[in-house]
Length: 192
Image (cartoon, rainbow, N blue to C red; front, side):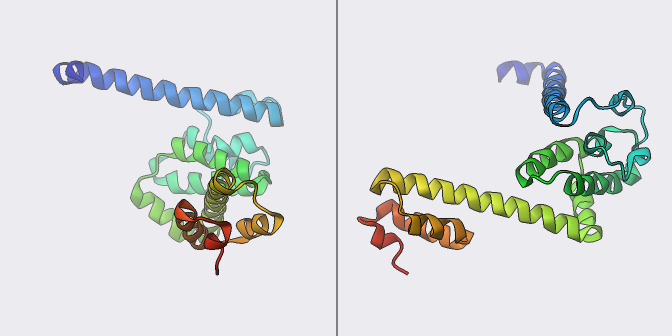
């Protein structure tokens, strides 16, 4: 902290390098994962001088995910992001991977808040689909945490309770979680 205060320009440069290498590391890991799943990307896709527009509509998931990394005018950032997301929805059937790959696209798209709002307005179906995935995974995470709490406090939940956990909405899961923190018995949690 003292070094950062006394040497602000150097600290900022080091921070910038660290951030760039972190992004490169994430890209390398994702490229490794995508290569394992879909095969080697073509050499032209990996080059930064490739025009993003040339790969709009591509049937290659790697190309579509990398659209934000390809050359494009700043004025096309929202269109490039939208095309990457559209490709993700069209070419990757696994919702869990879609969410993971969306993170990659988000990192490299660098959309401002204003650009995100434009995206949500102009590309409502894709924005809604992505939002739906995020909500579903959030709900699944909440259900998993509640299941762990129930198991720790009361033993393995019955099949009936498991079904209720799987079908409950986020609000209901939150209510049950609050009750589970202080409940003396399972009946105190699922009393509705």
